[in-house]
Amino acid sequence: MFADPFTITVNAIAKSLGRTGTGIDTAAYSTSDRAYRVTIAHTYGRRTRRMAKMVHDTLTANPLVSGQNINQTVSVHLVIDSPPGYDTTLLKQDVDGYLAWLSASSGAAVTKLLSGES
Image 1 (cartoon, rainbow, N blue to C red):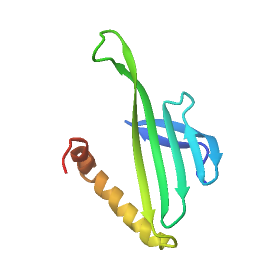
Image 2 (cartoon, one colour):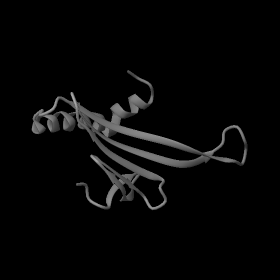
Image 3 (tube, rainbow, N blue to C red):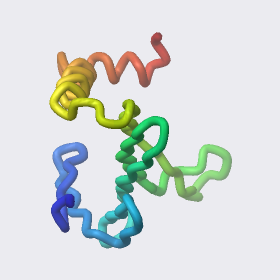
């Protein structure tokens, strides 16, 4: 079980997310203003899928109407798909390596991804 609450730091600002819901193999967390939400979910079948998803809602200037703001939503997902019973240690090594590559050199790979490079 994840800590309740837990903290995600975005742009050097800590966001505290408390548990807001639970279900079979799922949990939901959010900041008190619901601007940040995290969902953790697991599905089991021919493959085991584990997912962590962060959603951020923010008000931004409407590019079409001067002086008006619009709500925009961004989501970030991490999905781990493996065969049932796959060795957790090996799977964690794969995830750690992948996340290290994304964050290396001050997030150079993420910047390239967000810039549309492939």
